[in-house]
Amino acid sequence: MPISVATSGAINFVISTIIILALCLISGLGLTWYVLLYPVILLIQYILILGISFIVSAITVYIRDLEHIIGVVMMAAFYATPIVYRLDQLPSYLQIIMQLNPMTHIINAYRDIFYYQQMPDFVNLGILFVLSIGLLIIGYFIFHKLQKGFAEEL
Image (cartoon, rainbow, N blue to C red; front, side, top):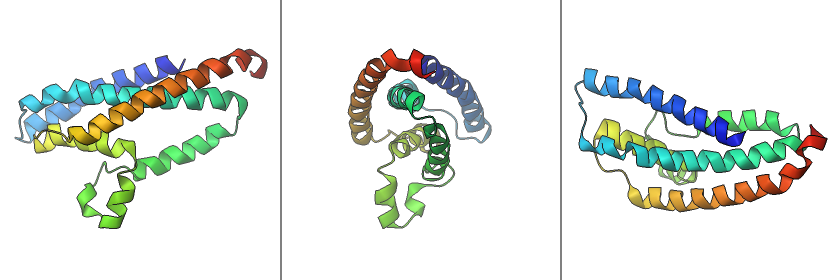
């Protein structure tokens, strides 16, 4: 189930990217070869989301109220991710805190390849990739371990 949810979200995101590509062309920015890095960034995002999905979905079966807490956390995470604003518009002490959010690096990478038309920061993306792989492995083992009791809980 977590794989299907994460995959459908990724497919929806890929389809939504068509709008971003159209806006780049209409606004006169055009496209550069950096757009070819899109699948790499998407893969890192997918692995991160899949790892989180494994953990959250497994624990939510046992702790039902977690579903409501996750909704609040997701809303806070949206505002704590520099989507409609740039990270450099914030004071330096907030920039440091915001860089702890893994989605900050993914959004900045997308912004780099589409809007700024430059190479994304592969150091941060590499670190995020390694952490995402670790989170995916941990999430899978948590899901696999807790999966045995899903039928009784549901």
